[in-house]
Length: 559
Image (cartoon, rainbow, N blue to C red; front, side, top):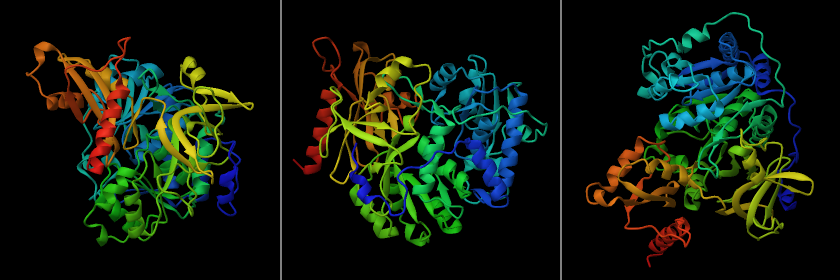
């Protein structure tokens, strides 16, 4: 275990933090008692106090209990950033159930997997996503949903609200659907189950070696560990004002944009859709102090020709992860704001960060140093021999934020953890190195995974979808360099003989849009006569990928 990073640890910052022995719901309850009239959520001009937030959470939770939700039940949460997302999340916890947050970009066929795998019977859905979910109410275990309209919390003019948020409430006639407003008004007394820190709190899904998303079992304790780490490292105090624009279904947005502010009593300026002008306006209007972002957001924000019109001087912290921020962009950000982008590293399996850069001494394109109480090492992925400074190997981590294991996947757990020096380490599958000062830097990935704007795309899952197209004989999906996203999804396709010349690459791309989430479908399709294969008939995807990356490197050097 490297200790070098402690030489540059922030002054007066403890090296470890004692994880609270209380639940995530308790954080909200305590904050509401401390700061009842303090603003918790600002949503396109509408403000909600902590007292009102707690009241709505308890009402929704009581309604869930009345509908038969029991401790440990998995409840689907399928909506974009909004007050309803936050309220539903904490109401599910209050009812003793487990939150299953789902990417709102997922389409119907993908939703089936989450519902079946989690044996989900009840869910929350926002009305723009309801058409995708509606057919599943009669064909899967899902049989009841609460339907939310963002406009319920965006009354009057709805300052700078997109049409999606202003849209009036849908008229849905179904015994399986309850309107949010109706559930919120439930005022009957409920008996809530006792919940401990060791109970499951949230089941975020991540891709795995099977190509099918896997649920990561996080307890209240593992989430609390990173929530507290984010609040202390930030620092996020009761006077902080967080620009909550990262998707809340994602662990980074969840921890930094929701849990840490609620624990601290900070305000959350919530945007349903990313809009660089609206984000700048909100920073100026509400004097936002904290902004957790991904690289693509920062690139887009700085590219705004109107940026100089806004006063964004209130920003104190701009941090994030998902993909490295290009050095030139980081320098421009510093010129514009006087702030360095503070990068971190983590996974769904670790509820966001296991590493983050010191706020006052960050390094560019760097994962950072191990977080509070984290033992991070570099090992040879085959022999498990521990490596030293400057040597490349697989990152393994042990810490209080590491998940319990994959939902109903004991075989995956066996392959994902190793014992070393009497500790249980999670194998991240990422190849990295650390320097003489203990800062970690990404090198490559053991797993065959594409990182597009911080979203993980599993090639075999995309290939499985492509094979459903009647014209496709073979498909191989790889990640190719992309200046803005880091990586882009590209598919090499072999067409059936009778289809050649009758269909275009663009038609395949257009078809793919309806088959998978927006971040997954291939933006580039290339028809080939044949795919390279090994002697055993396996497609040599790495060969294709290396060729594409070399091509991109040569293009950049002009050779």
